[in-house]
Length: 341
Ligand SMILES: [Zn+2]
Ligand SMILES: [Zn+2]
Image (cartoon, rainbow, N blue to C red; front, side, top):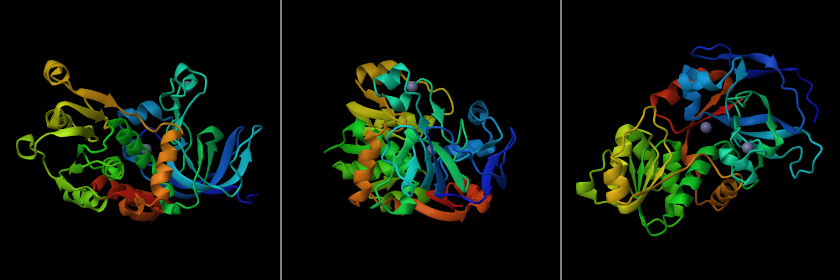
């Protein structure tokens, strides 16, 4: 498909400072082994808040000027490859954020998601908060056309949740979900879909607890008191909060399992002897999605209708209204926010 335009609207991190610039920029040039897409929807991730505010993590990962945004669905306009691919012009594709190198030890053993030389889409290179974007062919995911288009943009948190819940092996288990951000919300829904006996969510915000009930949690609480609720076979630690992690350690039963997903902003002290030795807790961690196994499992959940991500899409904005969308995102009173270029 030929594109006659030469300029497009984009959300640009132009300076090493808080805020963004929303402006017209040249269309991206398609490089070798890349796909050019017309962005249909992009969605805002928690990471984008830190980038917007220019926190220490963003300062270490982004080199302005750069187009930000990594969650998206777009229509393939052009492909530049010399190898065989099943991706065709007109396909609806999403991007895997973790751009792997294919050469390191982890890539050789197919652990692409924890590549030693990983680059990040919309973080270490131009991303999806724009009318057009280019994606490396090797991190382009062809969506199943049976999935509602608006939810194709929101598969990153669901994929994280699928990876977390798969590792936790929840069938027949009593599960606690600490923290109800988008991935926590999805984790509860996936745990139910994968046969958990009971799924309890914890969040201090009523808004988020209500979203959790919509996603199929059995019940939600503001605080979990092990004295009152008993202990859990599995705790999914999605909050990355110091207090949340402490509660996870106490709420897990003896020889229970904790999956660590939420990333703390500070160093965390653990009473190693009490929890790791005396209590024989199994603590495993999850980073991102298995490429492409998690995406395949995510597709099954979406196509079967077992998970409906439309329940967590709470707002839609034009791309030009990015700053308004970011304000709502920061308030905490939002599920996923879709942007339409
Ligand atoms: Zn993200
Ligand atoms: Zn690698």
